[in-house]
Length: 168
Image 1 (cartoon, rainbow, N blue to C red):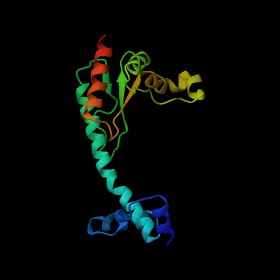
Image 2: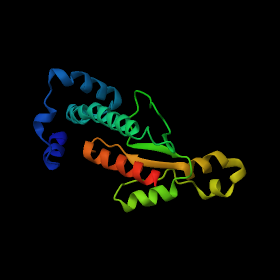
Image 3: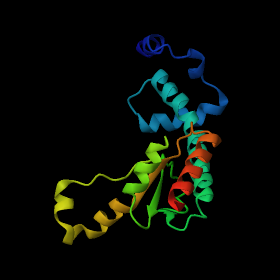
Image 4: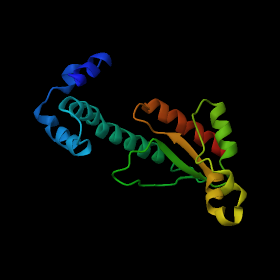
């Protein structure tokens, strides 16, 4: 009863939680993941999990497409050319030979959601001798989004902008 109230209150489509042959495995897996969950909660989790495989494949496709488009750029290379099969990337991390700060700034001026990663704790930045590799990598990383909602046009725009900015 409580699960039904959650479904109604959240305005979730009740039919997404009806048991069917194709989600029996997901419901069983959710039982192991959430041993105290009731049937409605397990079905809600199974419904949410259905789209994750599609999202992972779309992100991996976007990652590979964008990395392929940027392969011609000598000063930029993917940090992970072939991410593990189970990876679900949300960013394409790129290593920029001459440092990423200027490139990120110019890409953002063109409307590209470029970023840097990771932000390092002050303690790491202050101890260059111990954390030299992390600091150097931080200054050379540039990230571009590869979320599942990215269209081919957006990916092409980011690739074209990066290729233009990196060459000029």
